[in-house]
Image (cartoon, rainbow, N blue to C red):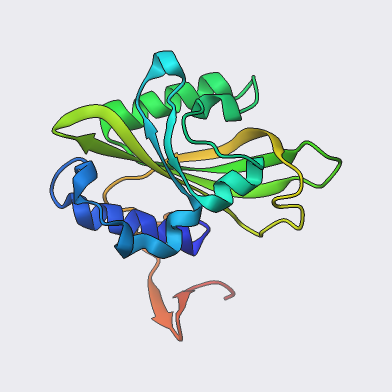
Length: 195
């Protein structure tokens, strides 16, 4: 997870779910995540309707220069990306497996693209699975054109499913067996190297 907002929302969601696969929609308190609400959204799990947005934050709406509530979430994506997003939403909902991904926002005007981070978190709604999904679409760097040129389409880049231990991985797992590491001044030091 590249942004602080993404990590905070995932940590809050993880805390609220406890030992369950996903928290109930009613278990979430908007006041606890008020700093994240501008980039957050809630979608209804409804494949036939394109997974309509039930709520969308102000910055997310500013990216598209319009209110997004009620619009199909999958229609915000490029034609090539829509099937992938549709499948991603199904996997996140069916398997209660959160996902994080890189997104490129292409503005309608001739401006540079913006890099965003997408987080999708499953929610139960009144005990039902596959009912709601909490999400976050946050910019890595806020583009200068935000609110002046609508995003024409989103494209999905890298994608990763998050397990229960997503926050526990502090060091890379590309370590050769038998090599030791230690933490010094907040840095991971691998013993070995030049002989």
